[in-house]
Length: 406
Image (cartoon, rainbow, N blue to C red; front, side):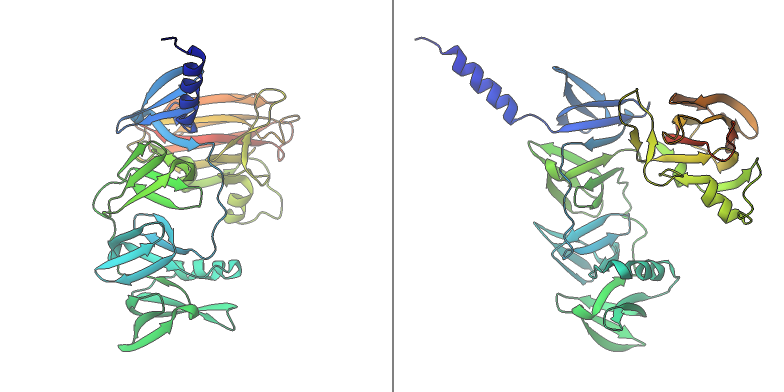
């Protein structure tokens, strides 16, 4: 029998294309990115295919995996937003709450402990978000029912005890007296009865294209789907095209932008309008964005667009910023350059110090990009000092992925 090799090759190529993994970008502890198609995701490693070859990467060396081919999803304003004690943020079509359980219904129904829920929000008016956040920040000793006032142009928080949440109402006790609030009059609920955590570590932070955040104990890929298991006892099954990022950085790194400064100083004369320390903080240091406004960018090779960094610091020349170093992290890494907007005429020097002792110093000019990697020893304080060049208030130094690691 004659074999039609051309047909077999065509079938093989079609099958290979059909099961091609999604394109991803992998950021490792070293800061070196890898790009390729995700072939498999196992408990301890992932396998990428790039340039015709496969490469296995241990998850212990992975900070995050970005699914670069996933299209951004348009937020559904009618979805009900639920926040959990571990930082997870979920959305669904219907939420109900009656201890000991809470339920969130969407493509699938999620059942979790009622005490895991810290907040639920139904209102989607952007103009009321600021007031919602203010109410969240206020100390309280009981649940807070947040209701509309003034024809849905204002919010009021009512302290009491939430008894039950249904599709139609919130059953509530105010000063011991029962109250039934129609759901359409309720913007959201802030719960005070909550679990501090689930008692189990969830080291994987999954972000969806729709803006959900799911803290997961384990994730598994099965063909074109991902199964995320949580410490609360429920799991979520998502299409790979719905995944934006898998963050494995918990316990491996601490981003400097997440650590409060102990002290911010200024070596050069500050503008007369800057008289208070908080003004100096805002003017001289930015976290996860450029001091010039917009995303944190570093220059790349000539002719290519600047590279955007999700995490990092932006420092104005003349500033000295000191951070407390968590004891478990003894190494400081970053990718450093002048902000592209200042690169043509800017120049500055960056000094890195541990407990006052200088570890390294280097000059930044033009579009030069410098990798930074220093051991901090037994120090308790990390200081970054930027010395001005010829333009004392115009040079901006950006530190992409500025992080402490073990």
